[in-house]
Image 1: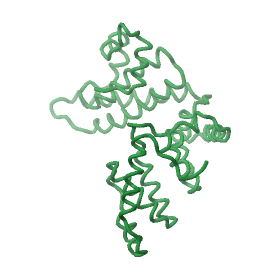
Image 2: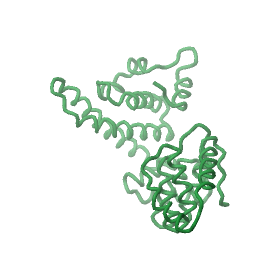
Image 3: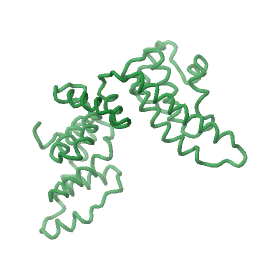
Image 4: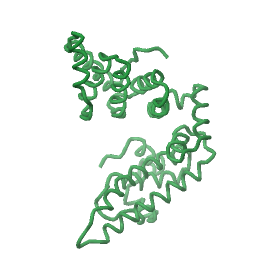
Length: 268
């Protein structure tokens, strides 16, 4: 199983290069970080990341480590909650342990929210607003954006988060933020797949059909299947537009995103 690079770096920093930390060692040293999660093989990767990050946050309870743990618990809870609904005829205890994992997730996420009420961490501020409707957290986050705080302006995740806020009332700014998100995407990393259908929808809404088609094709190249390209093709065909050049542009755009070299066609 592959753990994300940031976690591995954290493990080396905590344990030292000569004696790297392992999942087994965490469970041996701090058994409580493992015993209150599901016991079966479901959600194996998410469970492992939660356990490791619990240890990282325990050793170094920074806002950044709390934020990573919050995200890990949310992903784990989404998985284990679904798995908890599976009925076991012979092994009822498996269902019970999944429920326990779900309850642990709620308890720990609540703890992190309580611990970070006065945070200025952009990611935590977004979570406080988007999950708990904390308007003061949103105000703080928008203030950081206005001040051009690099933790917001130079972070792809935060640019996408802001786009999810502005999409409700400012289409042009949303497009700018989504373009910036793609600009900040690093080589070898996959951007949030919701970027593409959002761009397609916005461009189609404003009758920019060539733009809409280009990003619909980028979405397809990225493996995103839930995008309806036919209405866009019909609009372009009615206008006598050729799709060949747009297909080439979509391929170049996709390649640049994958290589981490995408440049927004807009100024900021």
